[in-house]
Length: 53
Image 1 (tube, rainbow, N blue to C red):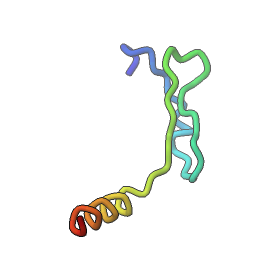
Image 2 (cartoon, rainbow, N blue to C red):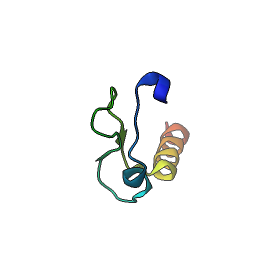
Image 3 (tube, rainbow, N blue to C red):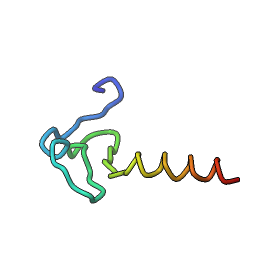
């Protein structure tokens, strides 16, 4: 990731939470965000939509 100018804050990346969090260190050329998702729910909803349409 260094080649792309990304410097991660490993401590912030290790945290678990439901909020949007900034993972890059100050001075990083690129902003990196962690966004909580519920992938299983989204897959189930999309499957249900496809099966009922």
